[in-house]
Length: 289
Image (cartoon, rainbow, N blue to C red; front, top):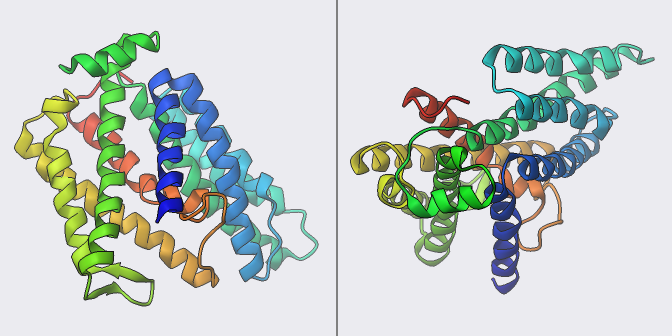
C-alpha cells in the first residue's frame, strides 16, 4: 500500500504540473505517455499473438494525432488525421513477406494507435478550451501559465481527472475493505460491486463540485449526474483494459509504475473519461477550441 500511495502521489504531480503550465508542456507529457504506452501495448500483443509489431508503427500515428490537435482542434482536420492513422499501418505492413501476418499486424496497430491517439489528443483539445468560468483559483493558475483565456479548459480537465482518479481510489479502498461480491471475476477478480458502487457515488459527489470548486457552467445537480456518468465510464474503461489484458494473457501491461503496473494501466479510465468530458463541454458550449 505504501508503494502504491507513493507512486500515486508522483503520478499526480507529473500529470498536474504540465496540465497547469499549458498545452505545450502538456503535449510533451502526452507524447511521452504515448511512446511508453505504445511500447507496452505492442509488447503485450507481440508476446501473446502470432505477429511481429513495431512500437514505432503505433507511436507515429498516435503522435500525429497529438501534434495535429496541438495546432488545431478543427473537427474536419482531426477526422482526416484519424483516417490517416487508420490507413497508415496498412501501408506500413503492405510490403510484408507474409501478407496474412502483415494484415494481422496492421489491424492490431490501427486499433492500438487509435486507442491511444484519439483519447490523448482529446486531452489537448479539452485543455485548450476558452470561455467564461467563475473560479478565481483556476483563473489564477491559468494566468500563471501565461494564458488566462484557457482557464475554462483547465477547469474542465481538472474536474474530469478528479472524478476519474477519485472514482478509482474509492472503488479500490471500499472494495478492499468491504467488498464481498465480485463484479467481473473473469476480467478482474479484484473488483467488487461494492467498490463499483462507491466509485459511482464518489463521481456524483465530485461532479457536483464542478460549479462551486471548478467554476464550470452548470448546476450542481447536473454535475452530480454527469459525474456519475463519468465514473461509470471510468469503470468501463478500466474493465475494457482488463479485457485486453486477460485476452492477451497478461496481469499488467508493464511495471514502470510500482504498485500500479504500467503507464497504460494508469491511464485506462482516462482514455474514456477525457473524450467524454470534451463531448460534454462541447455540447454545453464550452469554449471556442
